[in-house]
Length: 329
Image (cartoon, rainbow, N blue to C red; front, side):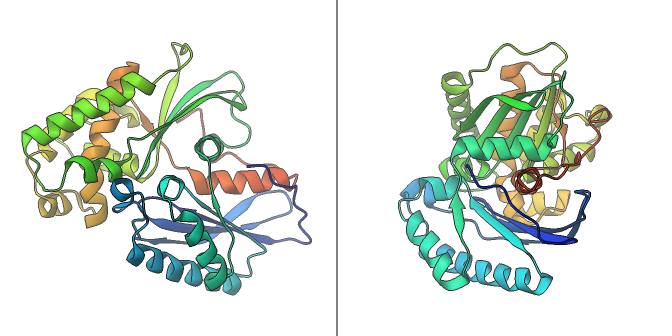
């Protein structure tokens, strides 16, 4: 979304990004030096699943809305205690789709004194790309970014400093859990239905320009980071050289489809909310790897919050540093 350039009155300066996603609400805060170098000073995750029920009913649940309002009050207090000069809070898929989202925005403004933006899908994709690649990616490199969220999966093709193509697919892990996986372990018929649905969505919506032969596929978001750790713990196929390939995903799926939620938590040291949505996340990632015929997905840190930081640095006229070494990604 277009926003005016910002003026920083003095350094060091503190900026906070708040990401109200479909699976959780998170904030991160940085202290920024005059040369544009940010240092993270605080972060917190609130396990409030705004997508819970929203993708079925079209409404944000009353309890979740109240919990979100309380979380935003706490975030406002944290920002004041940290001396944050600028706070930008955004919401994604669940808030985009909920018919009562504007009422929630108003409640957050009244009760927490914070402005909450509902991001269009295209802007969410731009921020993810900016957060993953930084403000100045290698100009000759082509990257495909896959970000599996709670309500949607973003597939972004980036070349040099710009986004070439951005798709937002309704294949979020929370959404698919509600549609197909009310129990754990799921019966084989439910897995087959989920696979067929994912295949149909990809067939209808996955339209990308020609991909370079040396394209690198990057995976961002908590689901893919969790999958990386789970794959590394498997005997046999694993994340070779850091990339998650199809063979590793097949092996992980074979294991996951036999485990209950409690067994997944114990076996992979996940918290219950992440364990609940990991199976649909793996199904989506495997389907994308198959459809695009990529060798593997390289998990990387970065996402909407990092994109908000880089966007702020750009608007302030500061150099946006790289979030990771792309020669090693």
